[in-house]
Amino acid sequence: FDRGFSSISLYMACSHSSPTEHHHHIPSECHKLMQRVPGYDSTSQSKLKSSTHINITTTTTTTTDTGGDLPTSLSSALPDGVSSMTGVYYNFMNSLVGGGILGLTFVYPAAGLLGGILLQVIFATLSVYTLFIVIRAAQTVQVHDYEQLGFACFGNIGYFFVCLCLFLQDFGTMLNFLIVIGDSGAKIIQIWGYDTLEYRQFVLLFLGFVVIFPPCLLRDIAFYERASFVKLVTVVFVIGLICYEYVCYRVALHDTVTAAAAAPEFTWFQLSGFPRAVGIVAYTFEVHDAAFLYYNTLYNPTLSRWTFLCVIALVSALGLGLWLSIPAYFMFGDAVSSNVLNSFDIHSTSIIIARIVYAVTMALSYPTSFFVVRHVLYMTYQKIVFSVQEYRHRQRWKRKQRVRQKQMMTHHAAAHATCNKHESECISPLARATFEESSFTIKTSPPLHHGLFSVGLFCANLCLAMYVQDLGIALNLVGSIASMNLIFILPALFWWKCCNFDWQFWRYKTRQQQLNAFLSVYGSILVACVGAAVAVLGVSSVFVTK
Image 1 (tube, helix red, strand yellow):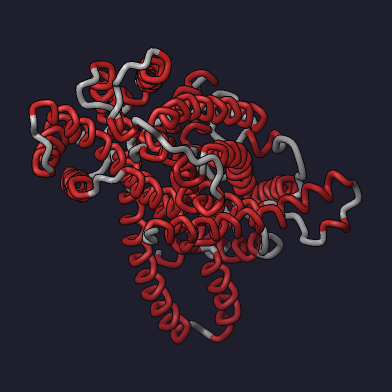
Image 2 (image 1 turned 45 degrees about the vertical axis):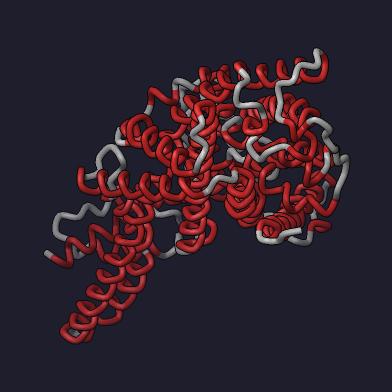
């Protein structure tokens, strides 16, 4: 019975795995092995050969594609969502205009007004390109999320590194939301004279456990995903209030800002301050952590529709960011705070309304990022546990095989050695399928796991937000460490791994193929190297004082 069950498992693994290396000999060996199973129908061998031949043809067509959308045979295997372009656009903007937009004004004192605008245009343009290549790379290897793309390209190292970047990005987003909420609450209670750190911490604790944490215990946050349009409207409303304050101060000459900005000083261009600014800009234009979620929910998800959606979303985010940051910088100059709302007078009625509205918006947006971080922790924990169990299973299997080899007859030794080799090669796809089937999600996780992960994650994030008050430092660190990897380094490396172009681009026949090969190979390497260098400079700039 044991040999028969192992034969059936081997047959299933061979027939469902992608025949890239051993497609000529694995089916025949599986057939020989299955002949020892009682009741096996030998006519299924022809069906196996036919299905294997079809898979080989599809794989070859996929890897030799050089431009445009992928073939129909490959695109049809990918998920087709039900959301319209407008719905996915609102979700895009929901991710792009979060807490990072309040820190864009802080870029100008470091890089200058012209330098800051230039950085925003560059990052928005490159984000469109990397959003295109990361989805195209995922289509090439037929995976549907960032983690599996990392695993397909670089194995477990790629999987865990992507999980680490996603965790840092969304954990930092949660931290920035709490910092904005704490700043808004602290500025409001300062009207009655409560202006110490202890009062800010009390407000943050109260709002955190009473307002923010209860929705985080939910297993489904579809309601918050439908509120993307509401959040976009509130952000536009806050930007309008800031522009109103600019008109009152600079045009009507009303005193509505702090005394520190009475005679502002401006910086127009400062190249040495670029490392201190790239982290904030990278964080603001990072949406790659949710790119697969949006793509998988898009109806008719062709690359042309996806690229058009990325362009209009990032252009809109760029326009909103400039609309908010430039008037605020003209009001406060280089004395602007890392959170632009903190630079205004605490008694300004319009700014009080803006603080309340933005704090409520951040509180409603917090569970969405919390959901992503908890999902990453779930999958990483299960991946580690399953890897340990798989290693132990392999060791037990090897010990059993050594015992069986000693007990086998001489004329069966050669055949069993051949089958043993092919069965070990088929363990990996079978193990991945078993992992996907046995792993639980947030909706199906046991109550103990759900409670421990939820409470532990929220308490860790809240405790950190109680003592970190500088939004600029938080944005710069998260942007330099996580956002730079998700925007530039990882998409470039994944596309370089999946593009299947040769480094000798001049050997291609047409100029278009030569250009595609040059950009895919050398362009990806250049983007990854520049992104890594800028990330190192951004992190080091946080710890370097003038």
